[in-house]
Length: 232
Image (cartoon, rainbow, N blue to C red; front, side, top):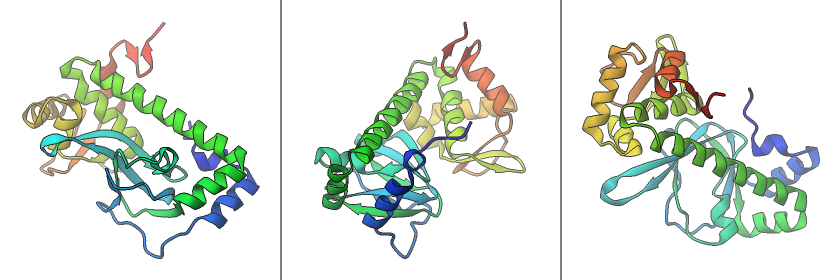
């Protein structure tokens, strides 16, 4: 089923307004570039035109928490502009990414003058928050032995790139350890277990994981439950 974005929800006239108000930089963000930084003043929002980026929360001791992945057609940074506070997360490009910037004042004026767009912004925010909460609960509530599998399923769905070997995800074992709360060593052990079960490819790369059997990994991670809860 096709992923519905904020841009998808706009009609022709609303898209024209969003295009006129925003500004597109000449150069894109490259993989690994920081687009928005946690704790910075929220002076602008952006619409992703093309590409993909990851939303992370930075905590103590250089640990991060995965919050979401944003794709073309989705807004980023709008929550900070709406509430007027500092940014609560960092957004990093996963691949070459073009955005259209909206200065905070211009963005708020647009929403004030076009209630239909305002309503769609709030609907987009609510939908994404519910989705993020659902997936975080699905991972956090899982037994430790299944937590990594559920996280990898989520990442494969929203970030995975299809290759001849399978679905490749840009992620390190430190990331997996932080995001599941099990630590790097335990995450590495779970990765090796999933490799032995042939759900993941054996790979020397430290910054890549390749899912070779997505359906098998889903059955392993959820058992008799689907991703949305127990089957009835």
